[in-house]
Length: 180
Image (cartoon, rainbow, N blue to C red; front, side, top):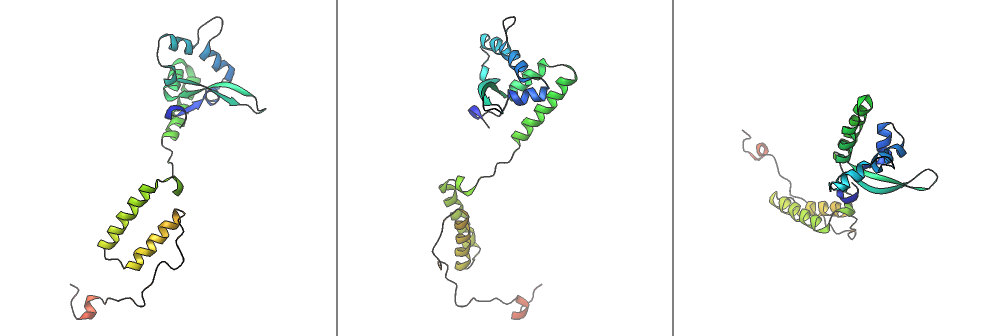
């Protein structure tokens, strides 16, 4: 996700998808001495240019900074409607797939990115469930230690005290009852 929380791709990538030179795409957007570009037309009509194209820059292979635009999905729709023939069809297929991939990309959070309040809420809920299930206190403490370590919280060695013995339960059929 880029500028203003809108998913965008650069005109460099769009030009590749359209199989045209980047400078030709920029000329279509900005126009030249003989005709207005799409940007000028949209601006004059007060159509909210940033809904389509957002001014930006990129560095080429030599390190030189060049003008480009971030193109929103709406901007790609606009360009696709202006494209015809086989190239137009292929461009549409490429940008639709690209935006689909961006929208469905699963973003996994690293432990450091999760707010501490979320962690605390989770630990409280986990504790309630474990207590309700009558889990042994040392088992609850072990789970707490494991979770703490995942979030980079180091607890002192030996903070989980194991009981000297654990009460074992016999299955009902060995206690003289029936399992039925």
